[in-house]
Image 1 (cartoon, rainbow, N blue to C red):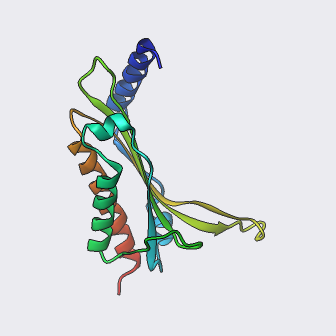
Image 2 (cartoon, rainbow, N blue to C red):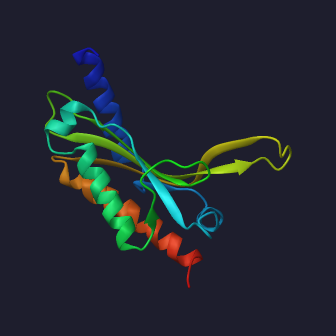
Length: 166
């Protein structure tokens, strides 16, 4: 990607960042919260993080460890291997670091993927987000990104607990 294109993209992201309020986005909380009811365990999926960003201290291994520790701390069981039918907590972190700007622009999506069946045609089964939150941010280091990941996880855990009280 050319330097001019990166600069334009960074400017667009910065403009979007400063124009959009609030910075966290979520779906209808009541409906999506109910999709968490009865979940006994989850599989964790952390998308790959760009090597340049990993070199700056935000690694896929570190993020996975943070996510799994937070879920376990909330007594949400984690399955180590993918199993058909087990919901997946899916985290995608996208970071842009333009060359001439000493800032990170980032987008974080945390979702729960589950198998669903279409009401109009019950032969159609697919996997989709049933709970989703996103955050856009800008920072001078990777700790703010990790903090926003923890905040999204806190919201997920709060929603999970509201529909799975014992």
